[in-house]
Every structure is written in C-alpha cells, then in structure tokens.
Image (cartoon, one colour):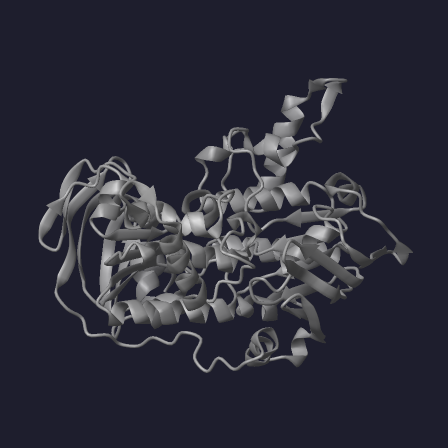
Length: 494
C-alpha cells in the first residue's frame, strides 16, 4: 500500500500512509486509538474506498471494489467489533453468503454444520455449530469470528484486536492457529494493544500516529518502551499510575444476592475512595454481577444498600437514581447509541440537568459536553459528530463522560481498557485516580492481571457465580488470584 489517504467530514484519517506485507509473516500494525489502523485495514478489505494512493497485490496494481472483491482476492478480516448476525446459527454466520448447496437454491445443511464444526474444533473451542450466536458470550463470539475468517482460505488475514475478549487458553489456541497459518504461507496483519503478544508472534511492526506513517522495524529490534515511544511520541514512565486515595465509609453493601442460575450468595462492601477489583475467568459471573448492580438482572434474594439505605434495583433507572454508573464491556451495543452524536450520548442519561421549565437548554448541554471533550481529550471534530465515526478509545471516553456528567458516586468499570491503546489506558487510569481522590467508589472488572494488580486496593475473585476469595493489594499476586479463580484445578497443576 503506497501513499494511502482517506478523508471523512472534518477529519483526515490517513495521510499518505505506506504498508507492505510478505508471504507467511505476521506484520503488527500499532498505534493509539484514532491513529488510522482500522481505517487502513478497512480500505484493504474493501469496506472503505481510498481517496488517494495505490495498492499492489503480487506486484499487480489492484483496485479493491468492495468486501466481496477483497474476499475474491484472498483478503479476510476479523473486525475488532463483532460482525455477526445474532439470530442465526454459528454455522450460518461462518458461511453466510457462501452456503454450500445440493442443488441451486437448496442449502446443504449437513455439510454447512459439519464444515463449521471442523473449523471450530480446529480452534479447540467448545462451541456447537448449530448454536444460535445470540446465546454465546463475548469470548465465544470472538472465536466464531476467527472461524469465519479461516473459512475464507485467505492469503492475507487481518486480525483487529482478536484476543481482546479471549481467555489465556483461547489465546494460546489462537496463537497455535496463527503459527499453523504462517507455515502454510498465509500473511497476517495483526492489530493489538497488548504489547506482550507482539513479541510472541510478530515478525515486523509498523507504527501509525495521527493518521501518518511513522516507521517499520523488526520486532526483534525493539523493546516495549521503544514501541510505546513510537506510538505516543512521549514517555509513559508508569503505564499503571495508581495513586492511593483516602478510603472512607461504606457507600455500597451487597448482602447475599442471588440471580437465578447465575449468581449465588454474593456479599461484599465498597468504600468511598476505593477501587475494588473483581477478577476471575471468562464465565465466572463478573459481568453478570455488574449488570445486576446496575438493575439489568433480576435479584431473587438478598439486598443492596447505598449509603445505608436499601435500594431495589428493578431497572437501570433505579441504579442511575441511586448514583451508580456502568461502563459496560460492550460499548457499541450496550454503552452507546451509535447513530446519535457525542453530545446526545453524553446528555441522554442526564436530561433532567438540562431542562428548564420543560425546555431543553442547549447552551447548558454544549457547555457540559465541551468540558468533557476537553477533560478526557476526546478526539472528535465537533460535539455533533456521530459516535459511530469515533475510534474505540474515543467511544470509551464518551461512555465515561455520560457517567461523569451524571455525578455518579459509584462507578462500575467492566473491562475499562479493552481494545484501547497504551496512551489511552494511562489516561483512563489517571481519571480513575481523580475520581477516587474525590471520594467516588469504583468497582473494576478486568481480565488483565497487570491492571487488576496495579489499580486495585482490594480484589475479589469470582468462580462459578460465587465469590471464591478476597485479597488485599499487599497480599495479591497473579498466582494467588489464579489459585482462587481455578480452585482445585490450579492446585493440581502446582
């Protein structure tokens, strides 16, 4: 790809970017959110048209005319955000538009389910190809995306944050698949903000910054700090800059709550100025707990008190009224209305603050939104930009802004830095420090051990919908957390 440029209204997303790829290599594409990585890959995969520049495949100048043409050229992509139909089966999603037929117009269902199951089994994941996608968790949906891309027999495979929602075992299975594909000559473009992964599977690294090409180097020639410096053009002395706050009185108490077949006898306390980390494996019940505290799951027993007063969480509105805000792990489907503007997303849960005598005060709205755009360094041309056109990191900041605007006193962060670059992660950690310094209480759910260990004052570990253990920050270690998360299975390994 040579001198690739792409413009959107008010934004130069790519400015004369170059990128090359060799057969059988894993070429890592790095950059902060908004650097242009996904835009460049959407051009290669046919989702966007380039404004300027040239693309050469096998040294032949090529115009890519849409996603179907890209697939015909042997280009497959796994998007950061899922591209699945939730109401179809896993097999139907994998072969959508390419269904095998017995006769014209008659689908060979036995073959489609068999071929899909073989792909899933090759990834070593426990998914039935006949299962409806809507019933799958986030991690399993990601593995379906991987299987779908592999079904294309792609010569060039683009992976945009493929491990963001995967457990360690699933990541290992994916890496084995990547190595296998390399030996078969498949060229892989790998986008990830988990820098430790790059040293395991990457051959070369190309860095973009603010839509511009910065450099390409072999992974073996770089350290983690050098990669970060290339990405952000500044030193980040401490990627997880935890600042101890004064921990005050109990603000939230959860007593023996249960959710049918999901959560069992959950009890804990949360104090003002505290970051309470919640660790555990995929499926342990962490997100279910977050949604329960936010009124999105029905409690069958137990009680929740806020500032000593029992609160019945029958809906998210009850939780918002009680001063609780949820930064969900699935920001696009659950945290934002993508077809609304930054301004509308920030103000929507807080309309009572902006209504005077039955009229919406637009000036007041504009002032509040501009404050958060500036405070959180949200990269958007205007407050009226639609949320769908923002990068993942900036979308996350918009979700944060709406709860900051609500004056919530309890924040629930569910995977707060999933799919976010190192620089944006540090900004979110610093914001969390500012919140607890003001007496806000935070529950932080995370699958990233450095994040849990680095930011938590106290850690709860969940297993099978229960609290399996509790550790103070001084007691906590990766081994201790895994001991509780896996229980006897982990002890047997030791």
